[in-house]
Image 1: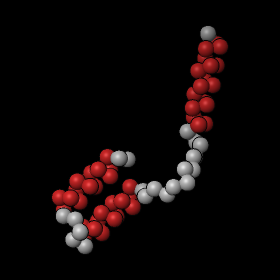
Image 2: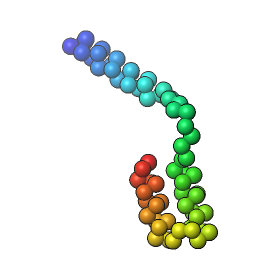
Image 3: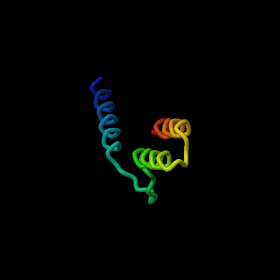
Length: 64
């Protein structure tokens, strides 16, 4: 019984430690905030409509 508890605790510790690891893929993806700011600018400049803005904003938020 004690060995099972030790194994479970080790698995949990390993999973917790692996969540702290950052992997650099070498690409700079825009953040959700950057995407929303770009959409607001496009809407304000008249490039996209209010309806298109809402649809694209929803898609950006859903991808997060």
